[in-house]
Image (cartoon, rainbow, N blue to C red):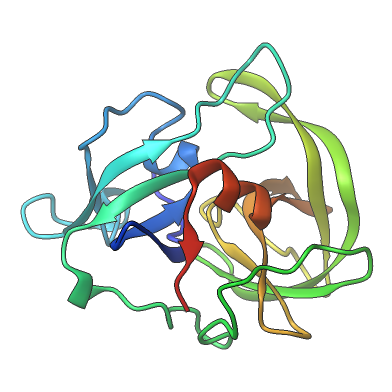
Length: 200
């Protein structure tokens, strides 16, 4: 699997990479301690030299009921090797405090597949089915984003941080999509589930 390392977060003085369960933990399949590579091995990364973190924790994805988040943490191996200012064209967040998504909010993201894109939130409480290797999973209370031009996201953008263009604050964690729209968890739900705070 290869995806996007969306943000840097911290808890208890330890810095973590934040992304999706399906990106970092391969849909509940990988054990804690699994090395995380950048570039990803699918992108030509070298398993001997490119490990930057280890899988630390994830919120399990469930097939029998609704999910609210698809998220995981990887503990950074070398704090000097990562930076919170990793979002080309977006730059550093203006605050560690997220902002609630709202209909009509203009947002942006940077991802592995489509790079920098802009879009507009059109739903903040969607219940939607998403096809995973585990099966068809239901996600409740999700943010839906329509692109301003072309696609807002594509395969490989999973884990991208969705940022409010008006305030420069995080509002969502991208988990997938279709050509017509992209799907994101509310970032507040993600941070609460993992008990971490954003680094900016």
